[in-house]
Length: 174
Figure 1 (tube, rainbow, N blue to C red):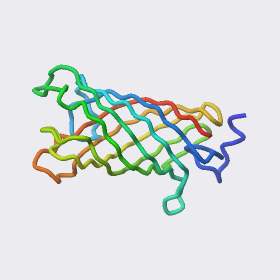
Figure 2: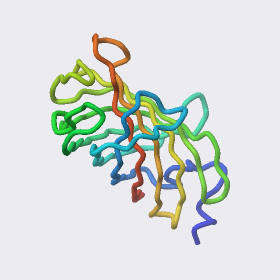
Figure 3: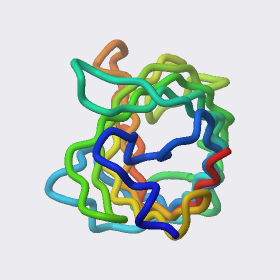
């Protein structure tokens, strides 16, 4: 049963399991921040595959992640040619559990990585990622998450218009 594995001493992201795969997709928004939430959708998307392992962060349940993402832009909107921002990205992140109740959890994460090329939107290959996640464990091995994700160069280059996404994904624990 799904509620028997979700014990207080287990990681809310992946329960008793030591590995997790996440498969997600997201819609891009033309804004530079997470809060207030982005409101201007653009023809810009992200696909992500993530491998995670459980850990703790100052005794708070957490997960360490290796992420590979691909952004895809189509057409022009709001003065940007979104096709110019179709790039692969790789980044390392860590998410901490902020809240959990039975099958529901909330987490926040941050990390650092690289995109394959510089562009006029971010101006650097260096990326910093911030994410807020709400997840639901369907069974002890399968779950779903919704997320808000932000990529920036943290002002390490002159251009820093960032990327922002709302998304949904599927988790598999093993």
